[in-house]
Length: 281
Image (cartoon, rainbow, N blue to C red; front, side, top):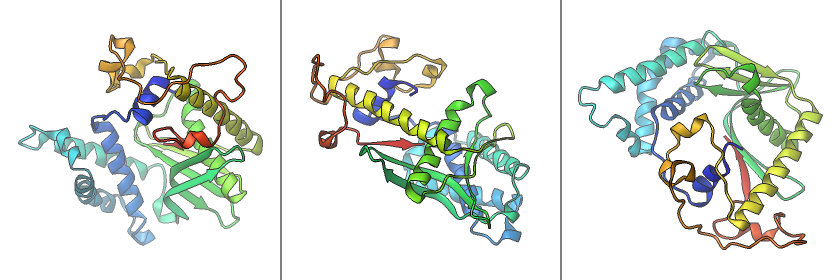
C-alpha cells in the first residue's frame, strides 16, 4: 500500500536494509513492555521497566549482532547512552497512559495466522491482547512514534483492523476495542470495530492481493513517491532517484486480453520466490 516497488524489493528481491536507530529503539521498547508483565502486578513499576532496558538491549545484540553497527565509532558510548536514554523516556511515558498494575494481558507478542475462504493467508504479531471478565477483547499496539494527524489516522487503524479480522476469522469474535498507544507523543487512539468494518477490510485485502498477484506475474512494480522516500534504503535502485532495479528474478507472463486467470489466486502462487500471504506489521 505504501509503495509497490518497495514491496518487490523487500519481498521478492529480498534486498538488505540497514538497521535504523528508530526502528531498533522501537523493538527494544516493545521487548521491555512485554517482559514487564512477567513480574507480579505490584512490581510493574517505571524503575523496574527502566532496569530492564540494558538487559533487553544485550539480548537484541545477541540475536542480531549487526545492530552493533548502529553505534560504530562511538568509542565513548555517548550516542549509545543518548539512544538508551530516549528508550527510557518512551517507556516512562507509557506509565502515564496505562497502569500495568491493573492489567493482566491474555496474550503478548502473539503470532496469529488464518486462511480466508479465498485461500489467502493472513498473519501477523499482535503486541497485546486483553480479555475482560465479560469476554470482551481489546487489541493493543504500541507505537514509539508520534500520533498522526486525524486525516492520516486511517493507515495505522487499517493495521489494527487487519488484526481484528484475523481474530474474527480465527475465533469468531469481533474485538470490542482496538487501541493504539503512541509513546512518542503520549496519545491513545481507540476504535471500536463492527462486522461491517472487518468485511470491508477483507474485501480490500483481497483486492490488494489481486494487485500483488498481477504485478508478480507481469513484473510491473511501480514506485509510489511520498515523503517517506527520503528514508528508503533502496534509492540507488529506484527509478525515482535515477536508479535501475535489479533484474526481476521471476518469470514474466505478459498480460493477454481475455485471460481470466490473470492475477487470480491459485496453487501456482506457491512457486519458489512468490509471495503467498499478507502480513500485518
